[in-house]
Length: 179
View 1 (tube, rainbow, N blue to C red):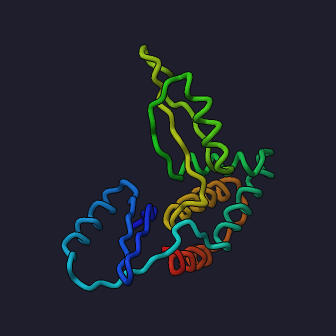
View 2 (view 1 turned 45 degrees about the horizontal axis):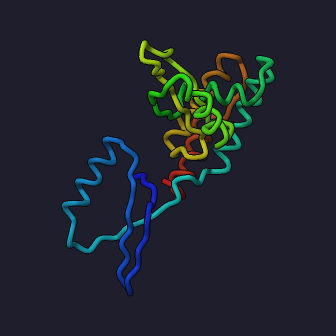
């Protein structure tokens, strides 16, 4: 389960940890499973979900650079295109006048973090906005989708890529270490 640790309270040998799980069906199912284990001894393994495999992350940027060179774009433009196509986002509704401040604050999180309006403001002044997350917070599966998308672009542009076995090995290393 992917969750953010909100609070840790200690009282002697007892610790109460408050988690804020990402709102996904998988996490909801995991919470229900955990509820059934209440009062039983369990083993808990904690991994830093924001850690990345340096090999997989580096390879993603190599692909972005190769595509950028071929298409005369920047690596950032290629990266953001890949995030848009295969990455993670959240849709929100904001007033049209609040959008610039929201976009600026979101963009400050990093290169892959940006906001765009996908439905213009309605008659009440509310716009539909998509907030894209940068790959720094992706799971192995999420980064794998982004890399797969970039590899597909490379193949369409006749740019050589690693073999599937090499890519699986990189992502497997990440999965083992970080989930």
